[in-house]
Length: 103
Image (cartoon, rainbow, N blue to C red; front, side):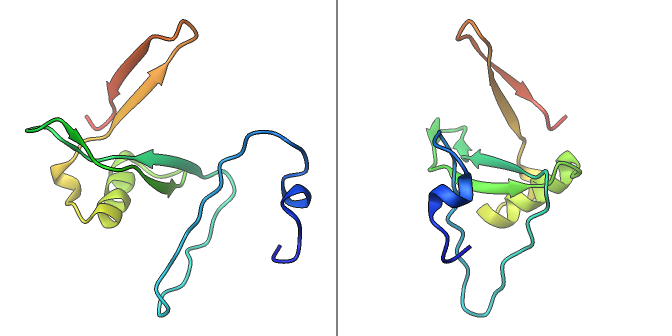
């Protein structure tokens, strides 16, 4: 892929989300499996209401919620037992609802 144009890679014009993943020199990239999911994750401090900056996190569709929490915990350096995952959904009438998927 290094010598291909972006047009050759994506195949057409449109809106795409791209990851810029980095690692330290002594680390290697994890393998991306087909069918994974890309998530934008922010940590919310409930005592202040402050929303931290979003980080892009890749998960696997076959993971359980607990496995996803463990992975997010590694990224943010937080114990999975000290977090819950909340999913925000928008419907066609532009209403937003929030669903706790950790329980």
